[in-house]
Length: 316
Image 1 (tube, rainbow, N blue to C red):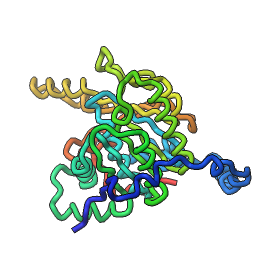
Image 2 (cartoon, rainbow, N blue to C red; image 1 turned 90 degrees about the vertical axis):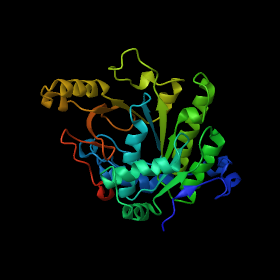
Image 3 (cartoon, helix red, strand yellow; image 1 turned 90 degrees about the horizontal axis):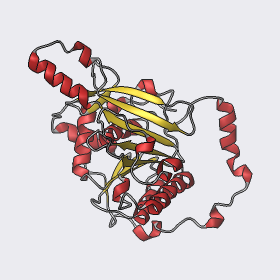
């Protein structure tokens, strides 16, 4: 039977990956980047990096090594769930993922992702092995709940990049690594550390963070609504906010109770993915998404047809 892909401090030499890279290893001659420059010139304006699962985002949002994306949202708005679906898409594109969630057990994380992969809420027992076999060598879970430390997160990233050849590292969430919303210097230092590690090891770090509570739930938060230091959004490469349209849900419940038509309500998106910082791209804007409750998937339109996440391979 396939085992869960779990990483613990006992399963790797934690101390070996705690140390910073020596400064001498970072001072390199300019021609070190010869091949990369040739690739940029040869590619012209070709967009590179891993894609999100929805085709309508492919020309606007990509996730490249050496960068950090901040995934924000209020409690209960589905940011970790949407990011989990995105991670399945990265795996389908052949890019390894390590998830360090300090708020959910590995069992809960994998069960939610399995429902998304199965495209329904009740996958049969035989799907478990199919799902885990598909993830083998491509997804790992760091098993620790509660508070973490920046040093430990740094060690996990170094280990994931050098030993597992992972391309995406998910840290969920900032508040579990830096305690205290007003601990601004520690927040700045940790996000700066993430940016340095992403660049030095060629990985993409995905950092989950909470937004402050707005007075009106219908308001869509943005990068200026993140909790804590403004340096958090200043340092990262992309800022994405997940906003759930809770007003639509209430409208639907009212219409169903009264027996009135729901077509107009159904046309409204269930969620928005908002990009209001895109350092290496020109696009900023909103992506409308609809929610397929059984599979826990976000979909591209109101038909709510779940995607076969195990065959999403678009990238480049």
